[in-house]
Length: 288
Ligand code: SAM
Image (cartoon, rainbow, N blue to C red):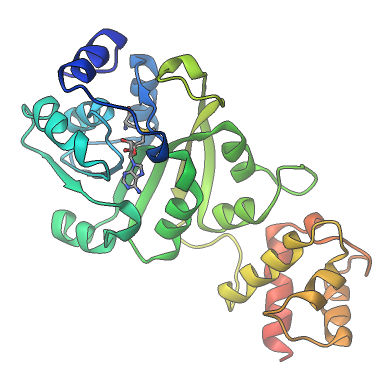
């Protein structure tokens, strides 16, 4: 049975090992059992699943994952946490802890080694300083993934699930929605963590699309167009695309492409939805 997930046992283990929290690793440990239960339920973990946990900390969520999953592989960067994890996860024979930086780990290889290449689930209370590279890395690599259920900064969760018209809409919204269906599971206040972060948090589940919701011949080109539009948010789409150093289209072709969407030539990129960015990318691919 999980023994962590409450303030008393968390403090005890931290004092026993004289563990010093490292701000640079984004260390805020969960101390609320209700939140932990919600994360496990939202991820839909069964006895058939392999779960990759990013940043197990002292092993709080890992204990819950070990109870629910077939196998848990947890990647933790902080060497000082390894002896602690040995103790807190000692009772589970289905957990493997790897002491490494998740951004350097070959996750596809892990999925092959521990799950025969079948889709894995990713669960994490993420270190907020690398939320975007972790999530984009998971989507852009060809790791077989079922869903990703993560705690992130509240604003970031909002950004992932909004569409045009919101101030939070941007490149991250479009990337996440191209690859997955986002669903906000819970908002989590600072007092659910030790130490308390100075931002609000939210748990978001990203269920990977079996096939993308839009057809794009060249997804890399679509994301270049997206970046060009949002890098110069206040400019028109036309100017954004013209000024982008990694795009090389004539003024005329850009105008034609925008007009092919049936929108005004003065439109801003932030007004386009995913389907329109896809259409724009396909136009450029077809009219090179
Ligand atoms: N899962 C624990 C919990 O919920 O209480 C800890 C979550 S804490 C917000 C983030 C964890 O990620 C820390 O244990 C931190 O050391 C670890 N971490 C930070 N950067 C990492 C990286 N690049 N690779 C792997 N783990 C990392």
